[in-house]
Length: 384
Ligand SMILES: Cc1cc2nc3c(=O)[nH]c(=O)nc-3n(C[C@H](O)[C@H](O)[C@H](O)COP(=O)(O)OP(=O)(O)OC[C@H]3O[C@@H](n4cnc5c(N)ncnc54)[C@H](O)[C@@H]3O)c2cc1C
Image (cartoon, rainbow, N blue to C red; front, side, top):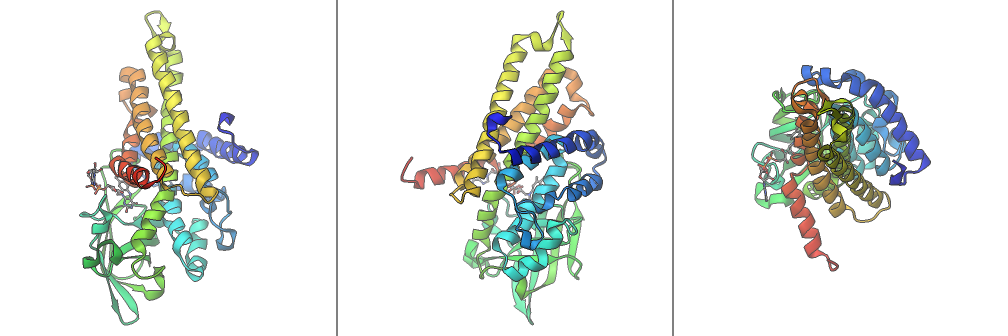
């Protein structure tokens, strides 16, 4: 795909992760999907490959690198095992990056090294039962008491929570202030008053763990607040802009996997004395899939390039996420259609990709929320 104008370094990295995805991730993906077990062996290899330090400064134990590289890595991981890519994104581009972007030097020195080496797992806790798209309506409270904060509230749908030791938690000091009352905290597990209740029955991404997290008078040191009081909502919106690049790359990876399965099946399945691939109706589906995947990939690389070069990238990240998530859903749908009945049964990979794709239109801002962000950017801009 060097129609994507990748550098030598980018190609080397992408090819190394692609080999790992082909040799290990995709081989185990169906079993992990069925068992819904946390894929420790996948993550151990990723740890050895140093993937958890990507985009993180070397002085905090990371390996540096760009968001373009991160996008290429996520695409390949998702192509091999979407669940594993989700664990990676929640850990790195949500949790570790939150601390990297908004933590003080002391906070980064303390919390990032074990995250960048995956000695500890991170989770990002924003969503609550009554606050999803309307994140500013969150109710988790923080109050001050004897040299520390006391945090109480209920978070839900928190990826990685069952294994996580370091959480980024958003909580309000004053509900009457709305979004201006929200603070961001680094919360370590292990104290009294944190209950993690795993959630089951997920439609896809079944090997990534997810839980409700209940905090009851949970003590958090004052020095664990990131930035000034009440900066948490602004930080979160900024953080989600960058993490959407990773989710959009995940969408491209899921779509690419479904497309490759469909092309391969169309070439070997006989019908009416030909192969499916000889039928123009099937060829048209394949042409649309290939075109849309390339367009999505280019939108992802554009958003990542803008971020790497220090330009505004929020609108472009939302466009990439909006478009790529639709492509993932549509391509996995067409790929299943090309398989006919055989695609409707596990362990056909397309059956899994079809279930995996849907959530990309929901998390890290639903498609409706992406449209709100894009429209606001367009309407506020002087150049339409
Ligand atoms: C598998 C999975 C993993 C997740 N991981 C995490 C995680 O690690 N951390 C975390 O904090 N959260 C996580 N989430 C939560 C996720 O980010 C939320 O589900 C998402 O933001 C949507 O919120 P909601 O589910 O409350 O839906 P709602 O906000 O209730 O939305 C319901 C519907 O209404 C639409 N809607 C809402 N407001 C508007 C509007 N103003 N205009 C138009 N339409 C609107 C939405 O687009 C959607 O279609 C995860 C969710 C899932 C499913």
